Amino acid sequence: MLETIVDLSGNQLLKRLPERERTALRPYLEPVNLRAGQLLSDSGQRIRHVYFPISAMISMLSLQESGSTVELASIGHEGLAGLPALTGGETMPNRTEVRKSGVALRIAAGDLRAQWPMLPTLQRMTLLYMQALLTQVAQTVVSVRHHSLTEQLCRWLLLALDRAAGNELDVTQQTIADMLGVRREGVTEAVGRLVQLHLIEHSRGHITVIDRAGLEGYSGESYRIVKHEFDRLLSTTA
Image (cartoon, rainbow, N blue to C red; front, side, top):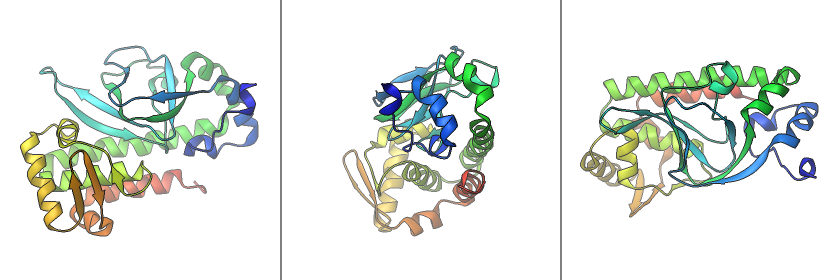
């Protein structure tokens, strides 16, 4: 039966649930393989599924009238995608798209809402996660407005590393430019600067961070604020 094979430990929210809540959720959770670029929900579209990433990474994107996008927040194994299904809003003026291929646990929004009254721990953890996610969105705005492109790149790389395994990222400069809402040439220059500072190594479609502490030093306060809030709100003792 599905209840015996679905492992919830890969997602930090599900991992911290008491066994009774895990038991209630298991029959409704479905492991799915997500591919980079896959659209999970578009602007104004009703949210039909909630995703708990394990190895996949998901982006919340602001869609501009020109067709360009800017990443507002990234979601990995620490959280969930599809919050409007739980808040009652059902839709958002944002696009939710898979940034990094991987596995997630998916549950139909209606099934999760039906079980919601019996999941008090998940309710509490979700509210804390929402606060942390709002902090990430707010600091993205601050970084875009006040920080140099090199600082923005450092922040983006660190947030991606926090949601990945190890110190390597498979990502192109064009993808980074799309996420930051800037020209690719600017990203190329910023990447080159970080290589010269011996903070990262770069090859086509691949970045390896070799000095994380140095990268944090160049990232500005926005990353530190986001990291502190996620650690504070979503620690095992929160």
